[in-house]
Length: 120
Image (cartoon, rainbow, N blue to C red; front, side, top):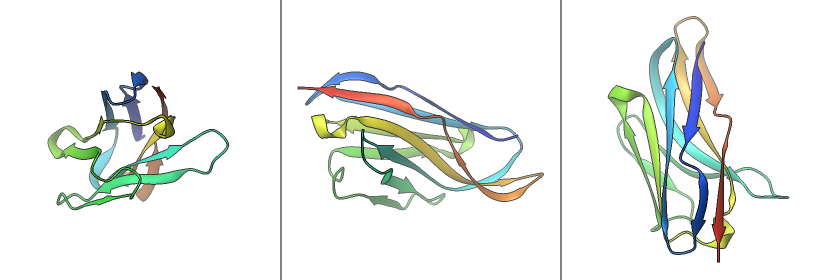
């Protein structure tokens, strides 16, 4: 069984920095794109950024220039470096990955979410 486990969320001051991590584990044959979505209170979940296996990134306009995604393919881990966060970045951040599972084939997996609160 494949699992995505996020870590690194918490309280951060506006203008500070925070780093999120998401590690995939289980019966993984390969991982294609990995990414970070977020859901603010009362809003729909939205894409923040994703990164392909080859390192091509796609950022939402709202985080472009402030957040940086990276991945360690050998560790099946993706990171989100949040620099200069704003109060509007407060949300639950979810890791997502397209994974080829040995038993189930190609599937999309979600992490449990990690809370990020940006204070003014």
